[in-house]
Length: 325
Image 1 (cartoon, rainbow, N blue to C red):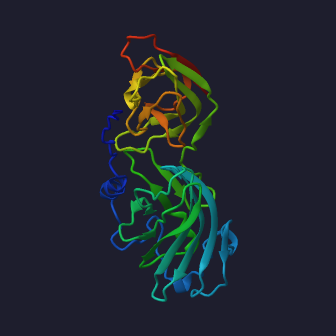
Image 2 (image 1 turned 45 degrees about the vertical axis):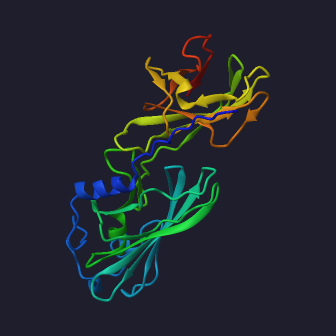
């Protein structure tokens, strides 16, 4: 009778806690006023009129001079977080007739993974350096390799001009204690985010009757709590069983994989790249999510050596060297 030994997969702390932590660390504006310049009544400053020469800021559309008209700014900026490619499409400021305004930010979420997924934490809307705890958000569940629309909405009690208000807003994913992604709405401000990198790696590790084929990889920031300045090197693997595997199969576990980092550390594969397979003789296991993941120091570039050992040193340990540039 074949036996498969199974273990429980470790669960990472939801990044929802991260956003809440960020909110407590920052001082929120009680009335969401935009500080740093005198507040002028909306009736005295037409929307978009705070720019030099009276025109709208680049990337914005001033829909007329009436203070009842909305101002729409095209953003078109992209960042990456938790397997998503996140594009802030546009932002809209609509006066409420009482000196304040509502704000809506339209966002497109592209899921770069193969599984249906929702961000584990909603975006934070930051106004003038403080997270707006009253903001509402729509964060969709996105099919694997698909895209879906979401948004962030809030309001302010008073503001001087729509363009200045938008210039003070950032869309924030994660907290300062972790690897963040920050997408500013200010036209000439740059996105603070690290784009995942595809690794062109291909190698083979053979021990006894097990063949491990490395068929690709990725380098991404870690978004796990407490892992600021850490990266994840993930290697996609395919398993091939030899004709000599005994009846009942051979168990393949996460901890059979280890890596030597560019700075000389020896690290065992992390459970976030969970491997628990029962390999039969002459069987091939090739799954899109079958990866060995290693948490390494940032920036993650340099020379690596990965190894596979199911025998705890009883047999020769195969290795594969590769470089991340």
